[in-house]
Image 1 (cartoon, rainbow, N blue to C red):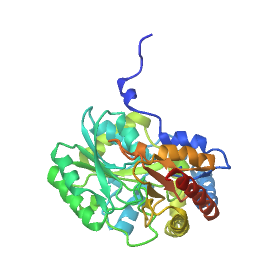
Image 2: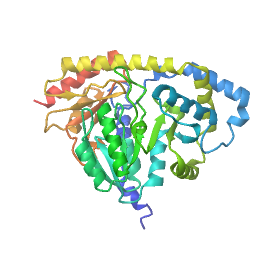
Image 3: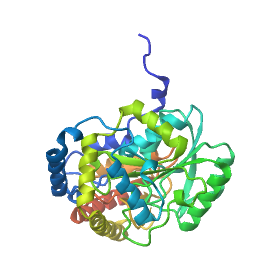
Image 4: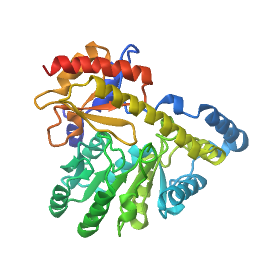
Length: 392
């Protein structure tokens, strides 16, 4: 029987995290594995009111086909928040509403990547981007992350070697929780302008800062900005699958064409409900509440790690976002540790899948947003027992 699959499918694998989540479906397992917002933070009643209002006042229109660019009022709201919260000049015409920010990655791949193009990615890097870009068969060039951002020497070497795209998450990166310093942001922007590399800046976690000061986007520091991605998934409701991208000129036009070919437009009714929600509720106060809750969860996890983990284990201490990163002593396999941890009914994500260049055997990711403090305390105790048994 002939092989009917496209060759590109041989380079793409199932999402490792999605496979782990099947294991953690057991309610007795304390899971730090999923990159999930806490459902307590979902504005259920406000969304219910918004949905009733939309269907009651403009039901037929909200259920009809719509424009590819997205709801104009919603785009105006997003552009206004960029101006108000980030001092970034974005017009509604610079925005395309997408089906989650994951679709942004797919559209970028379709528009900009040919087989063999060099894509620079952080090491460790976001698994969703690795999976999405892999469909277009690029050559990944991994640049190590330091505590304040990418290794600039390695980054410039990658740019000078013909990189076409640089994808990064400068704020509370997934999976590491690390953020770029202001100095690194300026240096990265300078290198991007020097070499003309297209920067795809993913910012799903930037709003979730609970310590320190907000820093400017790299996008705003470039003379010739690239593409900036955003999402309502972490600040409102991930199930609505509403994200967006910021691009201008011919780039935006090409991305619109790609989206038309992909899905015509993002769901009209979910955009309308989100529009109604953001226009009639205090979104800033809602975000502040999320940050307060997630900050407390982060503090509990860090405190428990300090108390129970061996001194030979290192962890990041993020000032925002949803994750922290754990590095075990050299020679330890987090894949093997995972099996031991599951025996104690606690789960995490091993770090190896986040690396495109090998490595990461002794690393793992912990999510603190979706477990309540008492579960965090018990889960870290169980994980610490597994680690202490494992690293002897």
